[in-house]
Structure formats: C-alpha cells, structure tokens
Image (cartoon, rainbow, N blue to C red; front, side):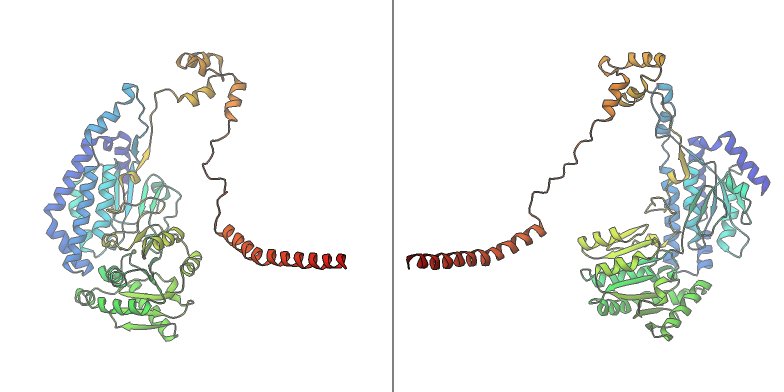
Length: 495
C-alpha cells in the first residue's frame, strides 16, 4: 500500500489530473467499461444483495447517471478560458482545484452506486483516487477490483485491500467515509452519518392514502436498509386509524417481493426486530405483521422505538396531538438525517422550518434517496447523486484587477508612495484624508424599511374593544349619576 500511495502522491505533485482532457478521457474509459460489463455487474449486485431485478437495475442506472453527470460537468472551452483569465488581466475568483488524493470508504448498502458516484465526481474535480475494498466474499467487489484496476490510470488510481488507519496517510487525503465510523484523524472529511434518524409526519391536512403509500414504499424498498427510510412516523391522532389501515393495505404490495428476494437478515435487522418484540412484550406497542415485516402502533412516548435507527421492513407509527407537540418532541433530538412532511403548504412550511433535519421533503419521499449512502454532513447534497464535484475541490481564487473603489479608499492613505499610485487610478474627489475616512466609516446604515408600528394589530384591537365595551357602560352611568346629583342639588337650592 505504501508503494501505491507513493505513486498517487507523485501524480498529485506533477499535476497530472489538472488537465481537463485527461479527466474527460478517464471518465470516458470508466463509462465505457461499466457499459461493457453491465450484465456482470448487475449479476454481482443481485447475488450480493439478493434484491429484486428492478432494484438492481435502478441502482445501476443511477450509478451510470453519476458518471454521466460528472463527465458533463467538464467544459473544456470554459476551463481553457478561465485558465487564461489572469493572462488577460482579469480576475479568476471562481477558480477551484482538487484536493489531490481522495480516499473512498464505501458503505455496503447499494454498494455499486456508493462507489461509482463519488469516484466519478472525484475524478472530474481533478483528484487521484484511493478506493478501500477490503477482502470480503462480495461478488461486486471482486468484479470492480478487476475492471477498475485495468481501465483507470494506475498512477492516479489505487485499491486498498485493508482499511487505512495510518494517520499520516489519512492526513494527506480527503476522506469520503460513508460508514459513519470515526477515522480517528482531524483531516479533511466528507463524513456521512447513517445512524441519524429519519422522521415522517402525517398531518390531518394531508392526503392519508398518498402519505401511506409513499412511506410504506420508502420503508420496504431495498429491504428497508436505506438510511433514508423513515424510522418513526408521527401521525395526527385524528388520522392515525385511517393511516394505519392504509399502511397495512399498501404493505401487501411490497412484502411478497421482499420475501421472494430471500435477503439474509443482517445483525442490524435482527436487532431492530428484537426491539420491536421487546416493546410489544412490555405493552408499549401493538404489532401487526409477521416474521418478515412489522407495523407497530406506538402507544407510549417513553417507548424505545422513538430513539431507534430502524433497519429492515419495520415501521413504527405514533400519534401526536398538535404541531407544537411535534416540535417539542423533536427539540430534544439530534439533527435528523431527513424529515418527510405530509401536510398542506402552510403546515409543511411551519414543520420543516422548526424541525432540525439535513433534508426536508414535502408531500413526497424521492425513491432515489433510498439508493446510496447518507449525504455528507455540512454540505448541500445533490438530489441526484448525493455528492457534487464542488465537494471534491477547494477554492483557489486569482486576482489581478484593482480593489473596489470603496476598499481602495481605505488603503490610499496608508503609505504616501502607495497612495500616490492609487490616487492616479481614483477620481480626484475620491481621494480622502484620514479624518474624512472616519466620517465615511460612521455613516449610519440605511433604514430597514419596517413600518413604525402605528397600525392596529391583534392585541391593540382587543384593548380598543375592551375600552369600547367599558365606555358603553361607564359613561352612561357617569352621565346618569351627574344628572341625578345635579337634579337633587337644584331641588335643594329651590327649597
């Protein structure tokens, strides 16, 4: 591994991957080879995942789409034009360069897409690639090791057969960690967090049938092993019965295909199943289903399923009383991986605004989210491939033009020689003395444009209404008392 890494380091130093034509040719060869071995790759995916054919083809299609998107992101004419901006005395403030070496540590879920999508985008951004594919019984890994090592440049691409733990090597890489495991170093990372929970909310304003169909599909497709499958569903208490019945009805469309796929239950699936059974035995939930799938009606808020990252064909449904009830419940949780809100526009706006999640989807659960890893934290993910080419590059702007006039004014009086040079490029009226700069610096900010609040709002209306009602009683009473006292006084004077 040390020798292979030395080759990658040498390729990084000589800047081989900076050439756009080189990157285009690499992606052309990658796409052509994947096309030529499509049948072999799909057969390997099917053997490893024991998935229905439609799921295999969907994963392969999105993986190839990632390569296509990466290739289309390269514009030779534009890259050449931008390269010579400085030579033409123009700023190149949008210039970006690759990190140099990218280490990809893929997840096991939909492994083909999870490898190919970041691989293609990292190549497009101008990086050398180090792919971690440990020795396993995976058929897909064997196929990819064989074809990728032959088609890609061996000076800029290498495969690691063991997990890399050397901190010095890791410190030289941008680490794409889809497993969520801590790499133990403080270097650059695109870190996924597949253990973060995913929430679905069904409001009383939602289309219950549509919501149930989307949630069941997201939970049961790919064996319920996607990090974006909903872990807990919060349903308005007035709609819970209808929603539960709709979920049971739609489940029959997905369970047969999952049963026929004969997926071997993983440790996470078994742990989830045991948690559902434990919650049932303690009386916290009632379960509908069988050994292959479970739909849990959650009765108590202290149920452990509220904090469980669900894996497999298991769906937990719990009621809520109000929108603030949902917001309060979610306040104590860490940032959600995704939230799916089924409601009218106003309600969806409120919930998606006050529930902290990396991604919010309204009245839909895009099924392409179920393919691939969790999106990297602290980055805006691509809805197509989860990654973008910008994630694999860093800004390196170039400036040759003069500073903006308002900034140049501040430096014009710092040095006498410099100021004379700058004064020539500035208008005569723009050359200021230090005390004049102080006056400019203390100019007030423009007003916000907010009204002064003379309008009558909700509370003011209440106060005025109360005063009006009180006046309707007090003033006539005072008038009557004044008349009565005056008449008595007048009679006393006359007598």
